Amino acid sequence: MIFRNAFALYGPDVERISSETGIAPHEVDCLINAAMNAAYLERLNWPVRAVTSPAPARQISEKLIRYAGYDERGSA
Image 1 (cartoon, rainbow, N blue to C red):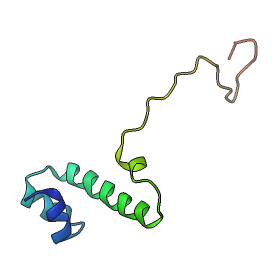
Image 2 (cartoon, rainbow, N blue to C red; image 1 turned 60 degrees about the horizontal axis):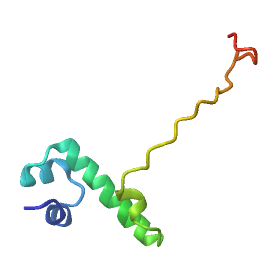
Image 3 (cartoon, one colour; image 1 turned 45 degrees about the vertical axis):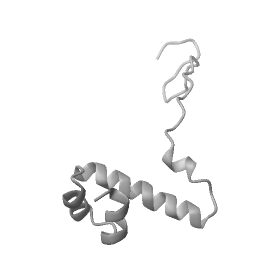
C-alpha cells in the first residue's frame, strides 16, 4: 500500500500507516504534516508548492548583527 492510499483510508494515524506501508514512523509523521498543510493551503487558494518544495538556500551575510553588549568599535 502506498502512503496516499493509507492516509485516505486511516487518516492521520501514524502507527497504522507506518505498519501498513513499511515507512518509518517519523517519516510518516512528516508526510502527514505535509499532506495536511497542503490541504489547508488548497482551501485558502494558496500555491501548494510553497509547502512541498524545499526552501531556497539563504544568502550568508557578512554584516555584523547588533546584540546586547555590542560595541561599534568591535569590542564586546
